[in-house]
Amino acid sequence: MTENRDLVKETIVEVAKLMAVSAITAPKARGVDNIVVRILDRDEELESLAKKMEELSEYYGDFFKRDAQNIRASKAVVLIGCKIATLNLRTPPFWKIDADTLHSIINLGIAIGSSVKTASIHNVDNRVMFSAGVAAQELKLIDAEYAFAIPLNVSSKNKYFDRVWPPPK
Image 1 (cartoon, one colour):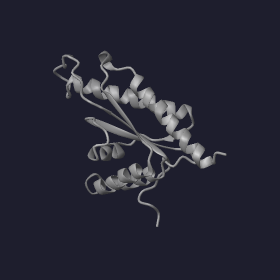
Image 2 (cartoon, rainbow, N blue to C red; image 1 turned 45 degrees about the vertical axis):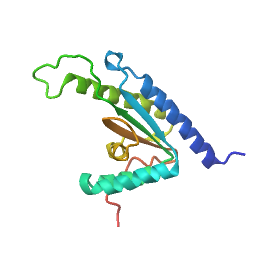
Image 3 (cartoon, one colour; image 1 turned 30 degrees about the horizontal axis):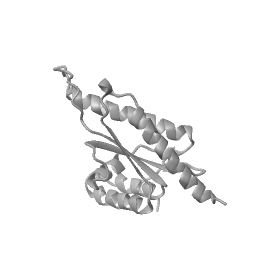
Image 4 (cartoon, rainbow, N blue to C red; image 1 turned 180 degrees about the horizontal axis):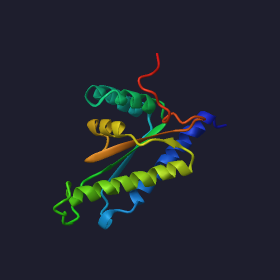
């Protein structure tokens, strides 16, 4: 017999894999694949990520601590990042960012959107996090120039919304 807790964890990991496929197959500028994906699903990986986020809160702000609690309450985290690809596009002189960087980051946004759509279809709670992405990069968990993290959980109430920080006393 499979316990609910085990069933939920296994299902979340399967959905994380589907999310990775969604990110990998998302449309990309000029068809250049610059997306990197990794799934964290072991308790020690999630705890290490949460601890790093707490450390980084000194520099980035208290919301890293709040988000660390969300990571601890998660069953898995999907990391999605990008490398800056050379696309041989001319940058308009009035743009503030070069075309290769811009299109590479747009690819990342499309991959993230495609990935969270997949989580939503399967009723898995999720939230895109800058904070956990930065911590993952600091820990060298993903080989990407820019990265975001998407924690995953299933419960009767989505833990990633209606968050209050600092916690009420």
